[in-house]
Length: 162
Image (tube, rainbow, N blue to C red; front, side):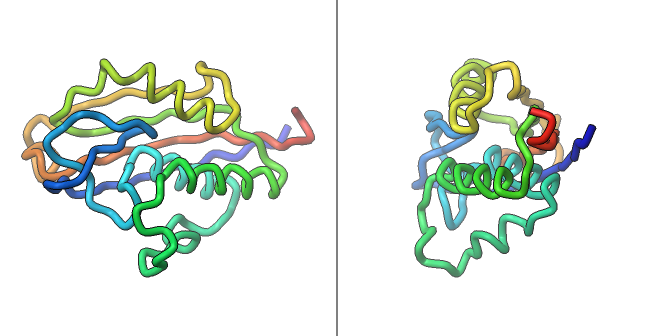
């Protein structure tokens, strides 16, 4: 049996004047995540985990911030491309476990829609994507409401085992 595990991390500053995208969906909030793309740190952490498990370059190598063609791009479009690259390397996604760290907004009401969006984007079952959130207990920039971070672990298996 051939399996590969990858982990991913991403953090973005919260800023006024941008919509908030997390887990591929827009969430009502007074601030959004700064970034060259839509800033979705949940999807970016998932991308990093998938790239790492497949032995591919990191997200900044594939999508450099100075590339004007990705300005404002949906992170789901980036995830689509990464999914293709992972498949081209002979891997398929077995599952992903994602944690987001933020004080606000409360994310539990959005878990189901985020899981459905990500599993649909990756042609996975709902159960293959897990999502949970924690606060930073008011510590540091995340705890002070200045940023949101996400951590992801992903498991790939060889397509030969599918």
